Amino acid sequence: MIQHTSMPVTTSQQIAYYYDQFYTLDVTFTPEVIRATNLFPKQVYLKCRGRHWPCVLYSTSMTGAKVIVNMNDTLKAVLRKAKNLVSLRFSFHQRDKTDPLAFFVSSRVSNITEYNTGSKELSFLTLSYTQRPPDDLIEVLGLLLDANINAKRRKEERIVITTDSLRKLGLKAKNTFAVVEGVPRKCIIRDLSFGGAKLIIVGLAKFLLQKKVTLRIDVEDQDTPVEVSGTVIRFEPVEGREDISAFAVQYDEHTIPVEYKVRINSYLKSYGRTYLHQKQQEQPEQAQE
Image (cartoon, rainbow, N blue to C red):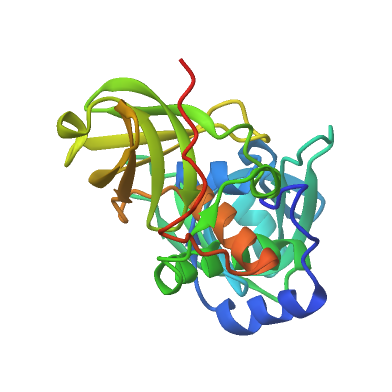
């Protein structure tokens, strides 16, 4: 699931809030969203009169979905007999569990249109859910949509990276790499927000200012790092060290990964506001050589 083991369990009140606020909003399952939600695409299918048809989940809200399916004569006949009543099976990988989370949502096919790919059999099916979907689906969609909203509302709230916040965010370490203009550089993450980060980076400040940077963040629940791109907008010198500085990175808001937004949002909602004090008394840590 999208939620991490370090995060508190979503309450029934939060589920009700997600449903009330977002029930009509669609989420399109791009590769990024599939990765963020841990959707198991090969286990998503339509069920009708005891038979299964593989399909591609294009989008879903809490009231309906759009899927792409091979609309052959057999399926057409079965849909007619079933009066267009089907069940849509969702499946999501679960961290540290062998079996995926799977459930069905009762639906009615409300519209069928040809999928414009040159194949006459591929079709878009618009499904209308015949009842409120399971809480698991409401949670998945609600977390995504809530994160997108708070990424704008709470853009400047900063999470200082400590041993405790590192664990609660589900990050492996604060020591990582920032790729500056294509060159990987060792760095330490000092703080994170929806809109940017503060990094201790090895390198002369005058050569890094206003440069494009991609921060690689290693997370506990996946093998590949989350990568967030932005621009170095300012720096603060580290006393006694000319080879490292504290750099402020402003993200390109149009490319921030969904999985990053969800992680930051879950922390801020669960553990309150943690602001970065600009005049910290502690000495900045030095990047490891």
